[in-house]
Length: 567
Image (tube, rainbow, N blue to C red; front, side, top):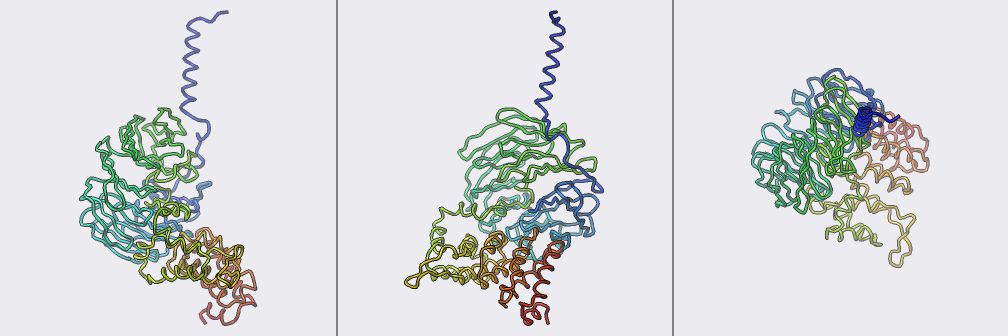
């Protein structure tokens, strides 16, 4: 029997509808990984720590630390007063929040307040964080301030006008801030380097090559270098910016009307039209733009090809989302619940608001030592100083250590004149045990003194990015003098959100032969004390276990035990 034309038409319509629905949705990712209520509206940012813990401010005046696997509370912190949107996590795991009493709190990964600082006016915009955990923030009255990880105001700078964009930090450690009259650049010690008269900027971003981008409210893109020279002005104003993202060679903005504008480093511009966005989005590793549209759908858009995928639909109006490094989409909604949905992996670089899930306004803070070395490899100063780390001469290596130490307590001048000194010290901590060096006619010789001094310098300056390198190299180290300095460095760095510093010292104190060395036993104990005080929580429990091994060991002298106990 031949089907009637009407039946054929109905069948075609059905198949078209089915294919359309299947093309707009994807079977994976339709259901939330988890959801939960947090006792009120969720109107603030969320952030993610280096250990994956999710931090959230709800309307219940509490900072929530959530388990990323199921959303359950790990702990709550209620400082008193209503909490503002001010929320950022440092590379070392410290969480910074502010309440309406103008109190800034540093909360350790265990959920305990490390300190609070009272400021005399509300904080304006979001803060930025240096790799070592110094908080850079702006005050309503036109001041920029630096708050050390110990809770002390290190410096303040008068911006000479009202700030219009949150500060950002480049890989050199330079701070950029926008005010009504233009862009300012500051060093890490609060000295103004230059001012550039680029007005109207409401957002700043920085790429891995050190180029800085200023975006106006109407979408004009201005790029400039670290010395304050204008590189390019797009000259176009496509509309109010919702999303700003930087790729390797271009900048992309999405406007309130759904227009997408891209400008590459060569000056080429391209325009696309997509769905109207409801919230800011991010770029995936495949170069797709991911965001909520007006109908609460979370889209993955190939804006060049015009193809879109619906990853999921929010059950209520969503707030600004965040994507974690594992591709988990986090957002609060108007039903007072917090949701986690699987999504697409984010692009590296400045791919979402505040650059990364910690909301810290810095790319420098997340770069590995290897990535930083790649940035410096063509710098003539790096080529010169790197010679001293690769040379066979222990005297030359020690001369590099002494040059770094000659800066005394002037870290800012050190950072300016030898900006990669921390990388050089990390290279000097390499053990020579398996690759013995020839020194003149004296035969093969290892140089533990150089390694020891390099560790101590990293500790004296509390270089947090060196922590993973120190932990890794302690596993192969056998010299008690060097291990003592490595323990000292971990203690001075102090931050230990994952307990790895404590465990590295724990491997030392479990060895009776090491504990017979008085200096090593004492440095290990002192380091555990500092890590205990700084981190609290489970890390403190772990530290106490190792600390007790020192106090109970028959290998440790009574003199060392009495020193640790303050007797």
